[in-house]
Image (cartoon, rainbow, N blue to C red; front, side, top):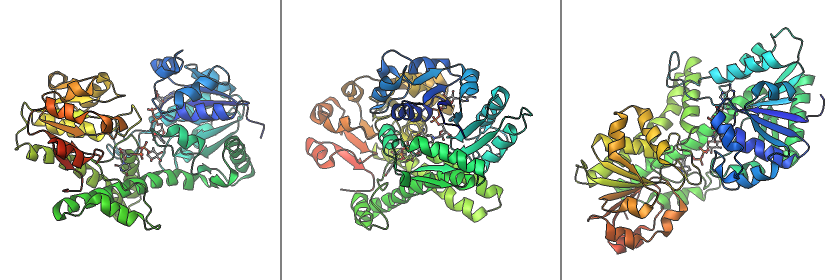
Length: 466
Ligand SMILES: NC(=O)c1ccc[n+]([C@@H]2O[C@H](COP(=O)([O-])OP(=O)(O)OC[C@H]3O[C@@H](n4cnc5c(N)ncnc54)[C@H](O)[C@@H]3O)[C@@H](O)[C@H]2O)c1
Ligand SMILES: O=c1ccn([C@@H]2O[C@H](COP(=O)(O)OP(=O)(O)O[C@H]3O[C@H](CO)[C@@H](O)[C@H](O)[C@H]3O)[C@@H](O)[C@H]2O)c(=O)[nH]1
């Protein structure tokens, strides 16, 4: 296998952009071209001011600024980049299917298949194809089938190299990952392809943190990693409800169990429910695959993680309604935070969307402030649900650029994202501007409840009555 000098990545999204920026940054000897069909997205990646790139991640604009134009390029010329590359990463979206067989459960692989067909059509030289997207186990079989039947004599090796970065910490995760996973064939050509990708990561990641497996283990491990992580959140969230009935405190319980090194302290933070583009989609996919193999108990086991998460989001909204005297029609509720977690502008599957939807059903008036999410995105998220007409969302939801204005004359505030800046607000000023009793529903257990109570707020947190 010849040295890799040119990489192409199909898909300039939350994964393709940051991952390739870091590879280009760490491997100045490799030319990396990220391509996408979305012209606006590529234009934003090429914006002269790197603060305007389409993905907000701490540290990312600096990484892009260093490599862009040197050995990192963003382009819509997909065919050209494929034709030139020795190695092609497929990093397109693999959303939950919204139609046909597997609707609402299985992964929609149409974008993956389109990529495979495009690569097959354009390629005139041998290439290594890397599955970077999260895919159902055995997808590589279909990709191979398409690539190996071009009749042009071009040879392809298909590797699985799932991405484990978390949004909000993408750059740190990519610079210093717990591990990199590469799955490939056991044949000599397969092993050579694995080695070529190992060599790229080994430019900055110690060899012992680069794991190699067969393709199927690698594909499946990605779904399983997300299922285990999400399961911990649903587990602690289930306990949060029990804590609210028993005067136990979920934060104390999490600390008490997390200090057992077999359990570990991470991912035990009770919340309004997990969001993000991955957890729900990947677990639904795992459930769907298990069912398709007739593994009913396995499927039901993992599905419970989603059921508990939906319950947690709904429970948060219903608690708010109950505490606001069972009527919120016409009441102003301020939302602090819309993103699915802090330090990202991504709102996919954010708990805020579902809580807002529930409250809007009760005719609440919602006023939103998020430091990184704009109003188009917020209305887009609500309209996508199709619960009510866009005009109704437009008249009942208002988006603010100033958190203090969002809270003025509100009956209640809901904390939906754990942005650090919320902790430092002038909470006395906010209290003074609100209707009384001024209520705070802290869906992230972010704020100092004692401090707020001293000001006069009525505070409800997750999994604690104190
Ligand atoms: N977002 C994350 O944090 C994360 C982390 C790990 C893995 N993943 C996985 O990575 C994959 C990509 O996720 P994402 O969040 O970057 O998605 P995204 O929607 O942000 O980006 C995907 C991009 O692919 C482009 N695209 C789709 N089909 C194309 C085609 N045929 N040719 C060119 N471009 C095409 C889209 O226009 C889009 O810009 C998914 O499988 C996801 O599950 C995501
Ligand atoms: O203790 C916790 C930890 C997280 N969350 C919530 O869980 C969601 C997901 O958070 P996180 O996992 O940090 O972010 P993601 O960007 O969704 O990353 C997950 O999904 C990615 C996409 O597959 C994987 O690559 C990552 O390894 C995996 O952590 C967010 O809403 C968080 O607020 C909690 O409620 N409690």
